[in-house]
Length: 378
Ligand SMILES: *Cc1c(COP(=O)(O)O)cnc(C)c1O
Picture 1 (cartoon, rainbow, N blue to C red):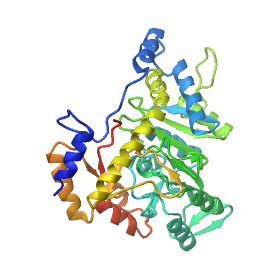
Picture 2 (picture 1 turned 180 degrees about the vertical axis):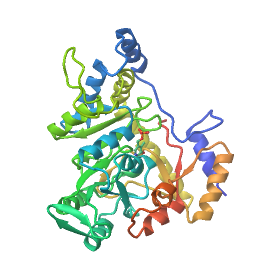
Picture 3 (picture 1 turned 90 degrees about the vertical axis):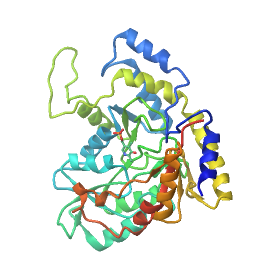
Picture 4 (picture 1 turned 30 degrees about the vertical axis):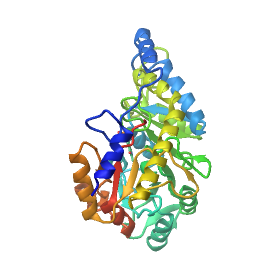
């Protein structure tokens, strides 16, 4: 039944025995910059490529500051600390996300609260968020208090699933009203815009990842973006072991983290960033071809939601039900085409089982039906 899909994907990626979900592409100055970096001996946490990358990245997404980190998870961790998330606080996020979002919340000693996603964006639903807050919370002393637990909801971390922007302007308004700091997990959405503004720049802080499977990669890496000068300085300080800058003295003024991106990784990343526009073109072209094919084959291809320009990082389809999804996954993976279901819902994982949830109807619906298909740049 899904043999025509396998044939189509094999024809998109010819001469391959096995087609992975997402391969990085190194077609530019990667080797040149890497060699230059090695020759300079500045391969670690100090070096010109980190500085170049931070400048160029901030310019690309349109923020004043960017702070490079060793991975996206550490960027999320620091972001939440900067949002003043502390032990016994609570942070709202969506159940349909990669586990890193919730791990970072846990590193702060806080607990996630899971609110449903929208069907059209697969990202946090402003409507569900608003309803949850109205029903469960009150503002006391400028803080959002969860009446069920008596705890403070400090931050809200929506995620732009597979690069498709969620309704972030509405979420921004709700957070403002309820005194909740907005921080975006835009790990998957570099190159994605909502109403012509780059994702990750609506919140007080935003986070991107450069893991090997993301749209551009530094092997491992991440970045925090913000327009707030003080937060940017604090992010740099915390990620560099809170060392007090001095030419020779070694002193630290608080517990810091060794989260700075090495120059070696940054050299790779600078070369990758130069190719981002080409990668985006390739992804959009691929989405067009998939859309046309699946239309003719009665399978729903997931397109960018309204008001957005998506990077189409991971291309995805929606099967009719769980049974069809399982047949599809089995058939494609058996025949050399890697496909993968969307994540298990976070509230079902052992470590987050006892977290508070809103009604999660849409998340449950999507969990059973959404599948990622090969998405490498062609
Ligand atoms: C990739 C990703 C991250 C960060 O992952 P790292 O591997 O630590 O860079 C965080 N959140 C989401 C949603 C992701 O997809």
